[in-house]
Length: 193
Image 1 (cartoon, one colour):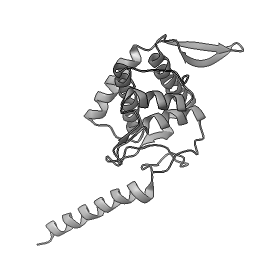
Image 2 (cartoon, one colour):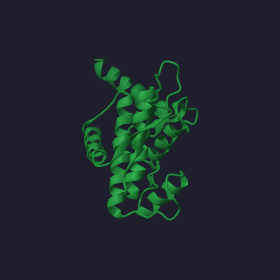
Image 3 (tube, one colour):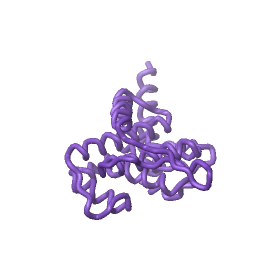
């Protein structure tokens, strides 16, 4: 999986990509497997002080946001199924409870910032503020989830025409093309008398 670090948009969008990629579906590794894992990731990204603590409920909300964002990235890649729609609904429920406020600087709109008192609200609000800023500046559509269902790694589509489909053509793209080739061969055999 390519790291997608050639983001033309905001470096903050890289934080969202990294958040989604805390679960490596292909490898079966989840950095957010417990509240301590969430704290470690958040502190490592500079989103909270080193002494931050989270509960199991906080972890559940964070995972709902992560998977909801992954579902949105799947939609950015032209796909979405019932599971994705459920993940977006869960994201919307958490997002509806997060206080954000508009920020202004030098007499102009400057973006959104979290206004929550609880540490998890502040962190999740900050991530969603990045998403909404990326939607507004047009960079959001380039952040996608790999179409390979066993992967779904978040990547930044740096192609000129925004046609990137897989996180890695050499791995996921090749696997998809191989499956399509085999399916065409089987179909051709069934047609022959």
